[in-house]
Image (cartoon, rainbow, N blue to C red):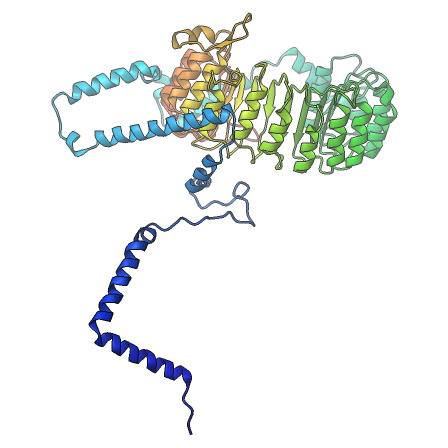
Length: 617
């Protein structure tokens, strides 16, 4: 007897049921109603599916990636992630002000979009007899609001003749008298000594500045060998500064330290010291620690120095040491950081740390946080963390929390993890208002809202914004540094402080010219920014007597009129402008600005290189 398959029987049963349902109109109608009810209930969810979370890749870092699929080389931020970050905003007055400014900017953006849409609507496209008059009134209003629009270059007939290459050659020739001027007596003497240095037995009692100049010239001419180093080092020197120690041996440096330390050496500055500064030199300094008067220690490229050696070195000379700098020393780690925190605290050591600079060190986050376990940073005036990957908001906040420092300078170049949270910590730490130098180059995670909040005055619960003299916001992103940010920065640099009450007041527009006589920015770097001629007007209004150097390289919205207006307003102390990558700057400014015959104003461009020197337009 043949056995039937149950699976086949099931299929036949389904077919029978389908035949019964198709034959029964009531069953078919009931199924249609049920399916319709399900579709109506799930329609909203199916029409708007929930957004799924898109996580970051675990094997790659966008900030450090050298490859980008975008045409401008930077990565676009995810709007959904930004919304999520806003919901998890940190607390405090800086955060509240940041949210208010963000909402204000969003409202302003929407209002401008609506006005632009209304202006380009179909109703406004039809010409009107009064359109020309209204346009003239609008242009007059713009000229009053932006005086740079009225600037015109004064190009002489001599400079207007010829093609583009001959004009460039004329500009280069105009700079030649600067490089071919008669050398000073000081430079002549230095060149003579360096040329015949192999015949020099001793330099005698000369100033450390002259000795440093001679050393620099010897390095430039590749004449700093072992014999030249022995001639440079003499008993009684207060500063031993060598910009390139590649030819110096450990034995030479040890002998020099044994001679200089008892005689009162106060400044030891050695760069590219991988060959000479090792365990032997460290032991020589430790042996004479009791008579050490070292005030500043700067070591660069010391790959022979181990973590425990650097730790014991700080412990031995911390009593008089106040300035510490280490660059490209790969073996420094937790022992070094713990020694620094212990020997410069108010309880465990006698040292007073005023300046601290780390550059390109392989320190972990725990190493950096160990610096904040004590109050070693209580007297810090200058802090520099350059190209240290593990420096983030937690490290910066921990350093400044609870320390009423007299901070004067901050350099966080290349610390890619820094965000707006660190700006809040820096402003809260600037209670004394002594911050004058702020270098935030290459910080891609900063936002324009964060910078606007940082420089906005009169925020309850926060000190006044810093009155800067040196500002570097280069390579922070095209949308980060804007005219609105620079407006606040320029005004903050001209803030006046009442000596009786200690309160700060922001000058009005009519007082900016007068206030700039006692303040204003001196060095400005807005390389790769989104600034326009409006920023040039702000600088002209607030930094007339102070501005010396300006870098606007790769800023495509600054034109001849804005730059020409700035040069015409700022004083003769203004001596250097960098315009690399600014193809929009043409002959109207280069041949028509008011200081065209002043050789002291250098306009550095990139159209040609001659030898190993940079070109000037």
